[in-house]
Amino acid sequence: MFTSRFFIGLIFILLLSSCYEYHIETEDHVVLNNISISPNPTTDVLVVKVKEMVEDPVNYRIINSYGQPRVTGELNFSEENEQFIEVSHFTTGYYTLELTLNEVDVSFKFLKQK
Image 1 (cartoon, rainbow, N blue to C red):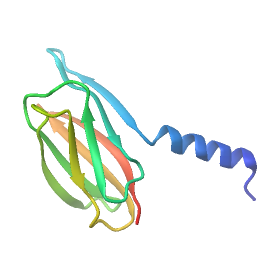
Image 2: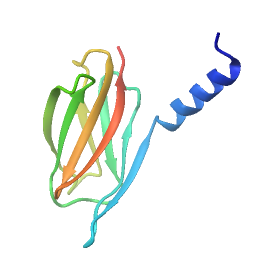
Image 3: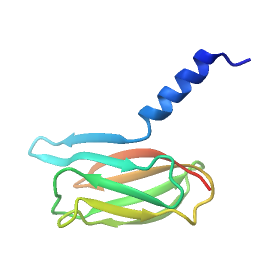
């Protein structure tokens, strides 16, 4: 059966994965600086936040656990550092959020709950 060490490890992993942050650079400049998503898990809205404004639109795609695209769109961080993606209509499960800016991709995994 499961030991208390297993559950402590599982809780630690869940806490670590509740908010992702990335720093992506190209040879010329910082493309996306400190991107984070929250809450994770989510029930209705996924918040995508950057610490520095980005002039160009960021394309996004959400893929379900079967690799099927569920939604695509564009986020604009030129005036606000926080954007929202509606996921309340998704079924419960694991999804991947893919962000693309200037041919640079970054992916985040998240859990949609009821």
